[in-house]
Length: 219
Image (cartoon, rainbow, N blue to C red; front, top):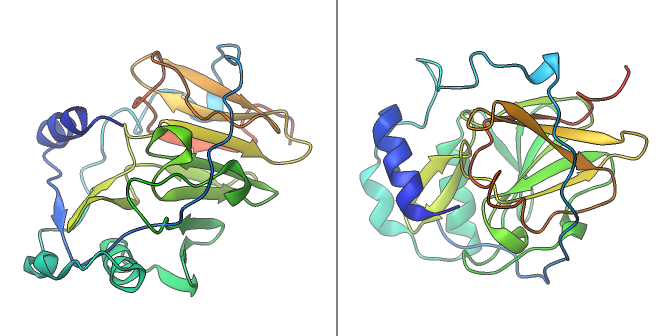
């Protein structure tokens, strides 16, 4: 993701940035990129409500407790849970956002995680190249609307995942393609199983608003 692009998008969508208590994410080594996946479209991720933020989506209003962002994992966890109403912490750096949807926090904003952070049977996305930042993941066929879930952009500042994804991984055995909808390209980016993309490429970077792990495969 690029910060100036994120700010302009937030202004256009009038969602605003959320100021909340938070802190930093999990250091790991980056994995290598894979080749470009073939372009394709699929009815499961066709144009529609995912092109622009639904009226009731976006992140909650500013919280003046943002100044309490200490940079430690505990306060970062508390802030991320607060930024995603209904979510809960299920492990030291893992949040369950909804059934079949998790977020794995990194221990440092500027560090990278690794493709191995993505569990088998899940499709995963990161807001930075080389698997950097908080990882948003969905299990097998679960549909993800990126406008719905928030990550920590900088100390005390949160925004949704829409238009922020730079790295992806389809780690779903038996599912050849995991698809990420890009309104900018009016097409799906296809992530081949077992081939982590440390960077989706200039054409697709910061363009996804939705994803589904098995959208391109038979039921």
